Length: 265
Image: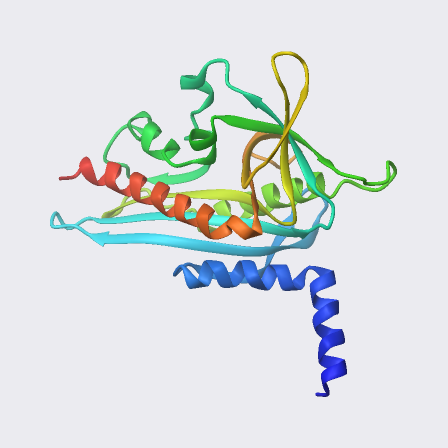
């Protein structure tokens, strides 16, 4: 391959966003996650196959002295978006922090044969979530300098990953009624932005406050004929900070494992 063609191909891949996808997958793989691109799912609402950009999984598996096994997983289903124009997240703080910072069973979660009551895992499930760390949540996104009649990229990405996450949950949920293992896994819909992410809010005196942000947690309202929920916990992360986000996810997974483990010691 001559150098001129190589440079044109690289430029095309970068412009199309495939370069961003490849970097995101590599970051997951470098941290020891199982990760692959091109996650296919069947959209029950539209009756056709669709694709989202990647799925990544991290599992903690442990054999216990009592003959039981622990199988705890964290699954990420993600869309990668490249944008030369900043995305502005409209954020709101908490009025009742103890209630609004809970990021537990309101996620997409499968559990089997728990050694405790579900509510006893609430704090561990919320630990190290973006909602718990940042203490605010986003409610919409403005794609800066977008033409008014141009379609919204963020909204369609959110809908797509919520449907894909539902598919990931269903495909990995067993129909077992009994077994010698404890199992729980959480599926997180994620948008990875290769671009600038800014949060917007108002100060007490009514002025606009714009701040660079690495991440943004959302309570995304979406209901369709075949969805199992009407609100989803969706995260947005800048590609530059994906490694840091994965580190938080790993800490969250460990908290869940350690808490569940404490009930069988």
